[in-house]
Image (cartoon, rainbow, N blue to C red; front, side, top):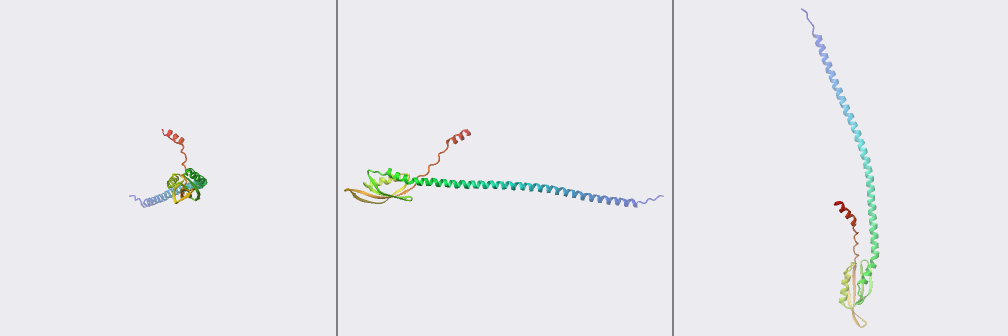
Length: 201
């Protein structure tokens, strides 16, 4: 009877199994390393793309800030110009105001029933004194002044009876508050409205 020793075969199988396990572990480790390397490369590329995007956005932000500064400067210049224009208009109006006030006084004073002796303007207050035929004449004169767009009120400061040329008359003094009429609104451009209506139809 022939006996076969199987011990070397079992040993060889164990060695082969261990070698396969080692190869499997090494292969798995290499796969993990390759996967990590791929992830690292992807993250690196994404990082570079984000850095480039951040740089582009920073440049765009700088450009927008420069534009914003220009817009702010233009707005400030426009506001300053509007203030200057308003000041010029006000000075022009104030320069014409005394002439218009005197013209109003002249037009509203009934020369056949009264005359003025003095007129004084201090700021927005005017004081006039004169002589009228009677109290109704003075009262009508005050009402006429208050109807003027240049006068806010006409208050009787004093009145007294006086005799001139043998005739009894009324001397009076009035305190008048001057108020410039409002500036006329700019005329509306009807052409723009017509064009807008035509586009709407």
